[in-house]
Structures are given as structure tokens and as C-alpha cells.
Image 1 (cartoon, rainbow, N blue to C red):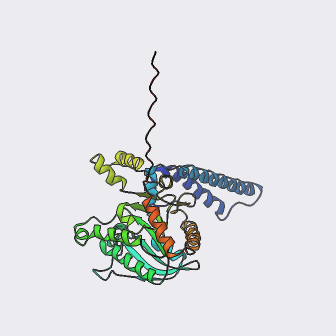
Image 2: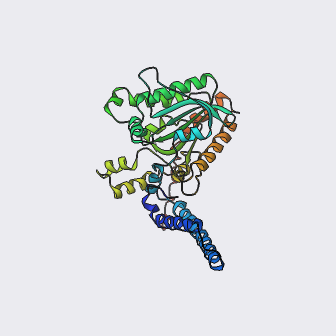
Image 3: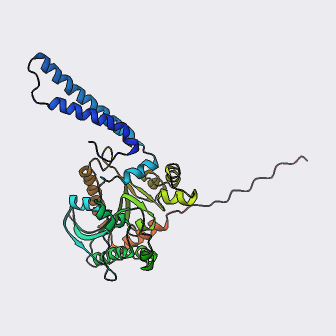
Length: 345
């Protein structure tokens, strides 16, 4: 139950988890005394363990029922949270990875490949942050270079050629901001992806599984259906980036204020109409039950592909255009002129 990495707001759970471990050791300890007192002691230990587990489940539910935006960002970055590769290994069968953009090279920050989800053949595209320190450095912590976005688009065009649906997993704080990435056309690569994904004539699903930062996320998220896992975030900029711009420093206070102002949670995004669905996570977040989170995500993907594959290519493209065209739309009305006040005759 306990992990080496502890979120700040989860600290009340640590003492309770330590007590549960001690109670489990007491119940399972060999050489327990035989007789009435031994039986009563064992029963008491079992009852204590059940009570502690109930307390733990209640506290976990209370903590995760209504996370504030900054804590949601922290959960989305938990080192044990499932990443694209974890979901691929769990429910994408016969996966064959594809590499390279045929222009510059391969970007490990974006994974592409064909596989099967349920009964559906599909192309899977997703950001990859890495697990070990070496892997994280190689993947630039999930921040893709332009060759990553060009690789993704090249494989999407291949999927379109064979009439294969596309599923993308978004998990990035943003596109890589380095000098070499800019020299190789970072902004142009993302812009081309936005334009071309809007025209692709096969179903596209996009799920924010962790972080969804700025154009780096949107570069693989122009889709017919966009969803978020409950404890993920999706925004034009990260809280730290926003805080550095508005308050000239990113610290605990300014990061928290920025997260509140950005409306970045799944609850905010569904309310604003930016996403189409919120996929629930197991109690305590996906990092506590990766298999359970994978099952929920797989079931949602299959249900959406069942629906979208019944639509024609023209319906898909038109619906996708309308979906993004309507983001941020509003009605402007002119108030009726006030009637003149009566005058005394």
C-alpha cells in the first residue's frame, strides 16, 4: 500500500498504512499461543485490521473525492502513474512499434505502432516520459521534438491509408522548448499536425492520461472524441509556466494560484466543453491500481470505436471540424433599450 514517493496531501495516510502493516504482521505471525486467550487475541487483531482497512478506504475516498487543482497536477505526475507503455502492455495485443519520421530521426518521447484493442485494429500514438533516470533523460521527460510530431503524423497517414482507427495517449507538460527543437521547426510541426489531423478520414480518439500541456499535447489530440482520466490535467500552459509569467516566480503559493486560475482539471474541462468524457480512476488514483485503471480506459476506448466506426469518412471529418470550431463560442445579445421614464404633463 505504501510507496517511497508520498504526495503532500496523502501524508495522513502514511501513519494509517504503517499501522495496517503492523496489524497484518501480528495476524500472520507464526507461533501464536494456543487456547482461549490465543484465539481471542487473534480475533481482536483481525477485528483491528478490518477497522483500520475501513478507516483507510474512507480517508482515501475523502482525500480523492474533491482534489484541488494543484493536488490534481501532483497526482498526474506521480512516478507510479501508468504511462503509455503500461497501457499498451496491458490491453494492446500484437503491438508492433514503428520508428522515425523519414526526415530527421526517431523521437523516443512519442511512441507509435499498430495493435489490437478489443476487436479493433488501430494505430496507437502516445507520449512517453520514461521510468528510470536514463530513460527520462532520453525521452526529455515526455517533451517531444518536432521529429516526434512528424513521426506521429506519418504513421497517422499510414493508418488512414489502411482505414485503421487512431488512438492517442496524451501525457506531456509541453513540447520540448530547446534551441535545436526550434531550429528543426517545432511550431511548424505542431501546426501541420493540427491541420492534417482535422482532415484524416478515420476515427480518432484522444485521452489525456496524465499531463496535457499546451501545443505539445494538442499536437496529437485533434480527435473525434477527447477524454481525460479523472486525475489528469489539460491546459494551455503548466501551472509553473503560468506562475512564472504572471508573478515572475514559480513557488508553492504561485503554482497553486495558477492551477486554480487555469481551469485545468477534468471537471473544469468537461464543464467548458473542451473534452467529451471523464474516465474514472480506481479509488486513490491510477498509481494505486494500474490494472484497474487500464480496464476502465480499455472499455471506454472500445465503446467509442464501436460507435465511431459506424460513421462515414465525411461525417467524421465534418463532425471533427465542428467540434473544434465551436470551442470558445458564445452568444452576444444586445439589451433592449430602456423605456423612457414617464413625464408629468
